[in-house]
Length: 318
Image 1 (tube, rainbow, N blue to C red):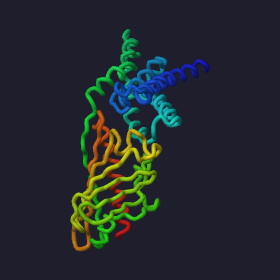
Image 2 (image 1 turned 180 degrees about the vertical axis):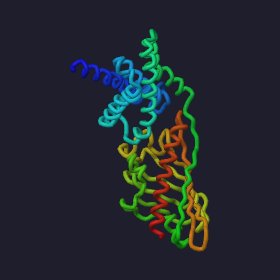
Image 3 (image 1 turned 90 degrees about the horizontal axis):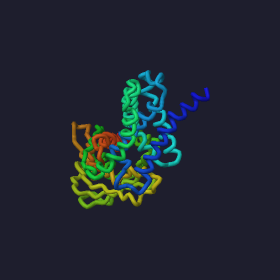
Image 4 (image 1 turned 60 degrees about the horizontal axis):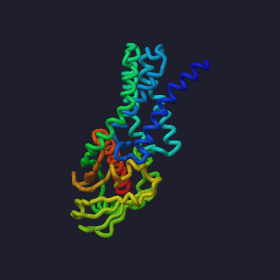
């Protein structure tokens, strides 16, 4: 029993130590020009290495089980999650978005390592060394190539049975939103600040609008196109240096190095005598080496924010 417990500890602790060391070098140390947490090298190759280490250190009899090879690598991943959250090394929002990729990569690493282990391949040690060193080899290359900045659109709409003027009044100026009226379940789960109110100084081009959220987050909006009772387009700017550090994780802070919201547009369309459709568009920018994955999450988050506002408007005008 003592041996088994010691063996289990080794199988979990060594991959965990590997993860923490890499996280320190990629995210905490001053080697930002070589290594970055916000990279494919970290988000895929590190959990792949964790999975491979876990299976490499396991007994052959256990490795024969496909379920063991698939799910045992998850244990050090969740241990890594707990340690980084407890010591505030990473935020909950980042983990929720990265976790599916981490778990899939860890299982894949476990499957590949299991193949070598069961074959009793003489190159097993060489393979493991290569897997462990791979993030350090590829991350400098990834940083040298550089992040790609892409702009994406988030579109939502809602149908409203109400007077056009009443709808438009609630579009231009959103009065205080009570907590029980907040329906943004995804952003709430991720710990994003809750919307509070929006203020516009006057209706027209050049109008200045402030969208105020909890925890010190403010969107500064400038109206660039305005057609009364029909359309309002505005630029959006967030000043990340004004946002308290405890408000959002540095990797997902709006206006930061990786994620920014650029503009928004409301369009009011008449469907029939009693019904209007309110369209809401926004554009956001991502600057990462894995936009193919980050864009899916960012779009989902932006649509959750927009649907939340549209639901609040619907509740008030109907």
